[in-house]
Image 1: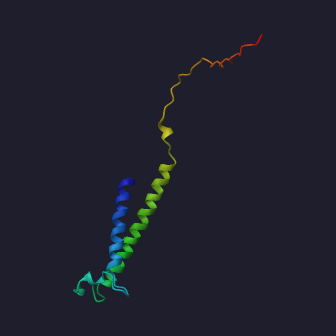
Image 2 (image 1 turned 45 degrees about the vertical axis):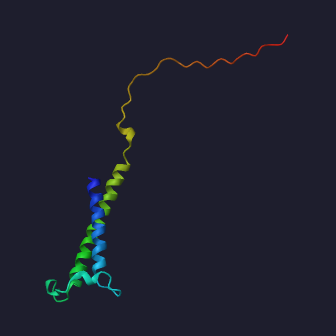
Image 3 (image 1 turned 90 degrees about the vertical axis):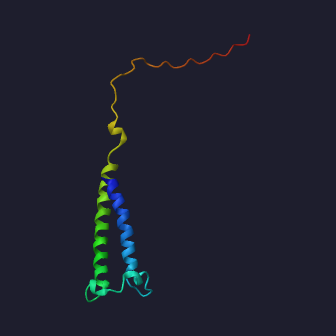
Length: 107
């Protein structure tokens, strides 16, 4: 599930970037590619439509970010060791301490 949301996050980030670049600004940006037929978007032209689309995509981006954060938080509470089963085999032999070597004594 988190893999699908992660791919969706990348797609939304790309779309938000493109939509923001298409909006007209003081430096025009990519707004020249928005087309000359402004009657399709209404009386204000594409500015109102692009602003609503930007808000909608931004809202989806934020909701997806929160969902990803929640899923990753839930995954971080689990450990790999939670899936390991420990067998009840216990070695009953007690390890013996190694003997200390004895130095030969001088006569």
